[in-house]
Amino acid sequence: MQIAGQGVTQAVDTEYMRVPIRGLTGLNPIGFPVYLEGSGGNPPVLYVQEGASFDLGREKTLVDGGVEAVLIPRKNRAKYLDRIENHLEALSKDPTLPLESRVTVLYEAAVEATENLFRDPLNRVKVHRCERMVRTQASVILREPEGFLAIRKVMGAGSSLTLHSVSVSALATAAAARLFPDSVSKVSLVGTAGLLHDIGRVGFDEEVGGMESSAHCLRGERILQELGLPDEVVQAAALHHERLDGSGFPNGFKGEQLDPVTQIVAMADCFDGIRVEHEGRIGVFDCFQIMVKTYRGCFDERHFRAFLKAFGSR
Image (tube, rainbow, N blue to C red; front, side, top):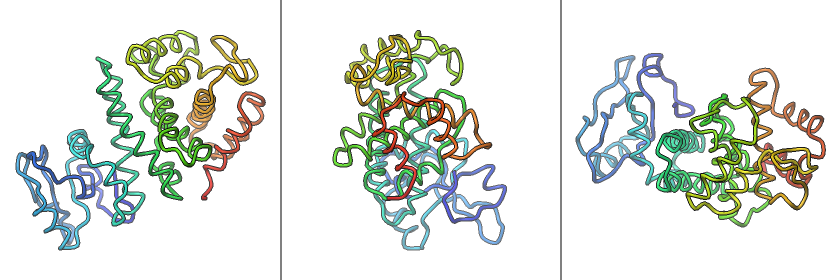
């Protein structure tokens, strides 16, 4: 992870990650060492050792000295993200940090939380952790005119279940923000549905583009029902391969049989599948062209227009 606009040496890129100092402060001892970047090509300098405190005094010293970011070993990424989790909402609103820096931390935290969610055992605590991050993501996209565009720049592309789920969540959230600009709750609900739509693949067919059977849809529906998720989230897992014209599966539902949340998630899921399949070969709007030609009549036109507009600045 790299803070935008700040150059780093190859060694720092390889061994360390640069992170904002905001979010590090806390009452508990820090679980990883914190370094300052060395000057004149020198190696990083230890600032706080693992197990020591990182309190407001240390933060103030850095801020007063004009330091906005520190280095931590890349191997401690998970520990770092766990520490800052409770500060993500405040960090996402911090006007002293570039938007790119804020969304990078948010994206990394979302990936880590989603990876953890998909490890056994699945439970409501893990889901709640992800819901909090989705809500923060929704707030950023609704609040910041360039919020989604910044998220797009750091959004990974790959066939892993985790990356696909995080991407579909961001894409669905962006479309929902256009459709429901006055409701962070509704936008967050859509984002959560996007994140969990493929949860039925956990432990089985976890590669996007694998066998598209109804099994993972039915399994996802059951898992989310057992976890007590809202009906809209459950239905998105069950029906995200349905299409507005009735050409999808598992039931061939169409039109009003499909909840708007399900329709938005299905559209985002389809787009991300195209994006991943053609990664590095075609651009975003080529992906939209493929959707228009190949999936005509499959998605609601109003939803599609909102989704398309999300890829431009407000």
